[in-house]
Every structure is written in structure tokens, then in C-alpha cells.
Amino acid sequence: MPSISVIGDGQWSKRSYGHSYNANSGAAVLIGSLTKKLIYLGVKNKFCIICKKNANKDHICFKNWNYSSSEMEGHLIKEGFEKIY
Image 1 (cartoon, rainbow, N blue to C red):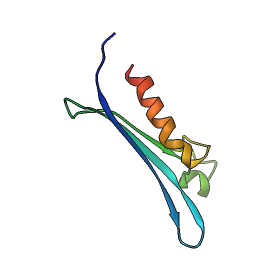
Image 2 (cartoon, rainbow, N blue to C red):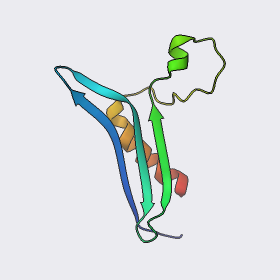
Image 3 (cartoon, helix red, strand yellow):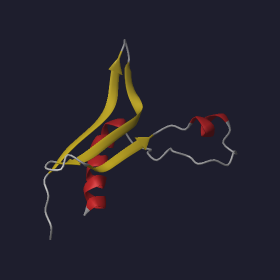
């Protein structure tokens, strides 16, 4: 089984201006530590403006997450390792 070292990081926004706000999108990357090349990039979205404005319209929907925003980062890193393996 081949083995490589990677650097991974993910993000989702948490803002607080008098109230708690979690972002509707998050992203994560895995980068080869020796090559410095991108191995995996994942994005999760909790919102689609087309669905909100017209639920019956046929379109490519980028909404692919229905859970907590704070779970996006960990799930994307796990998904990245599963896809590169």
C-alpha cells in the first residue's frame, strides 16, 4: 500500500455580530507535503438560491449538505481521505 504525507485544512465561517451565525458553505483541501500539489478539494453547501426562488425549476443544484455547519470541515477531510485512497 503506497503512503504519502499530506497537509489538510478546512474552513467554515462562524460570525457573531450580536447573534450567532453559521455560514452556509465550507471547504477543505488535502495537499501533498513533498510535492505541494493539490490532492483533494471539497466544498459543501447548505443553500441554493435557485431552489429557494423557484423549487420547480430544473437546474444543477449545488446544495449537498443538510447538517450542522460545524460538521462540514471534519466530514470534508474524511471524504478527502476516502477519495484519495
